[in-house]
Length: 286
Image (cartoon, rainbow, N blue to C red; front, side):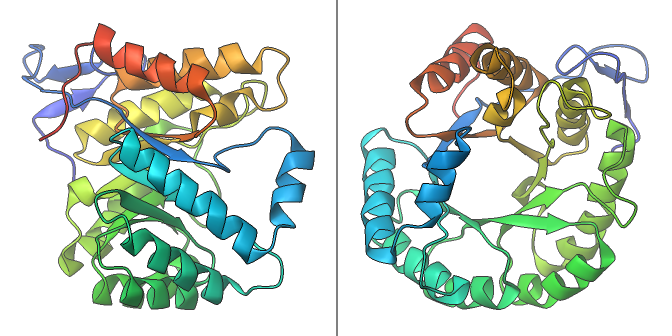
């Protein structure tokens, strides 16, 4: 469970919101927010998204190779590998993604999956230690995933959702993440290898405002988890979407965000995150 020596003031975000019991500030060294690039994370134009899902695998293979090459050239630590090709099952697709990722093991893979069987087979192929998206606190989903995580102690994205749905508060979301951690840490998946997804609705979506997402990042960091967001989601369907996503990304970096998954082509958002790191003097994690 969380460290009893600290409490979180969820009315403010990290680093300001952390206090010791004597109200002094804890001594924390915050690593920089790392950028994870991918071609479908996320595309606001639904026509483009549908067209991408209609691509054949050989067309996706070219896109994935390009994304890995770009990540290598830009010295990025991780690439988001996501595809939904026409005429190929998810099991075949994940296996193919794992083989491509083996050609660039210096770039860690973030795999997205729906099929437990498909992800497990891909983990047999992939030679690195990937981050997989996602595991939730829903009992039926967690029970299906546990045997895979016991056999393959990889890093995981945890969506803090339980059988009742998405908790309305950051504290309740961290409780869900804690329950998941209690079940998978015995498999060798350390707290720092569990990345809590702050869950990012559009800025105009209720009842879960983006402030709760920022508070979730802050509370997750205090509890010792890694953190991850898809910041472009904040601007989906919003007239000022680009600015909304940028402002949200900068605030998330201040709150302690570890991984920001961004479309490779979104140079505006990538530059905002890089500049937020510089302003906050975040350092590369060794």
